[in-house]
Length: 237
Image (cartoon, rainbow, N blue to C red; front, side, top):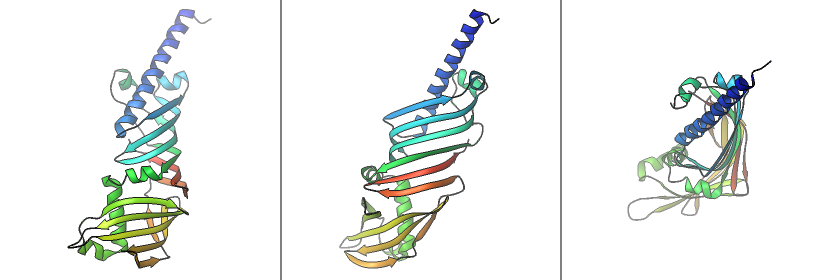
């Protein structure tokens, strides 16, 4: 027969571990993000698993998150088979992953959040790399591109930019569809580029972007004024 006092003590310990662990996960997530307005976390683990630092599943819902200047409207994630340094956490130290964690989920980026992300170095660098691939002469003849606006309409992304040059600025407009080729590769196609309202490039074969081995997308879609993306990403320790 279980001693009631022992059972109560164990329950209190587990509640303390759960509370401490939830706080540690939230703190760790916040250290990865520049900003977040709302976050909900649900931990799925037995008492024994928690005390061993083994978490079979964690569900996360976040809204209005910013990562390295990239604005995300909402994201729902599920992480499985998480191994963490539970002993150190209970001593007040930071959470640390002990193994790679696969995370599956869905994120939504509204058009306004895409525009808010244009000032980020991460996105502007990616856009500049794309532009220089499509129009190599741009890299030689113009100063850094000023990305001004992104619109999502009729299943197309349209990017507006200004190319500073001597005497007169050049207005650039890039229109492209977006398609998932395989789990690790997306394609921009067809692509149309206008310079001062005059078409200078039409590319139906498109441009492929490799997302890397840690990513496995299931869907990427342009809806009315929003980008929807679902799949898996590996978070490394």
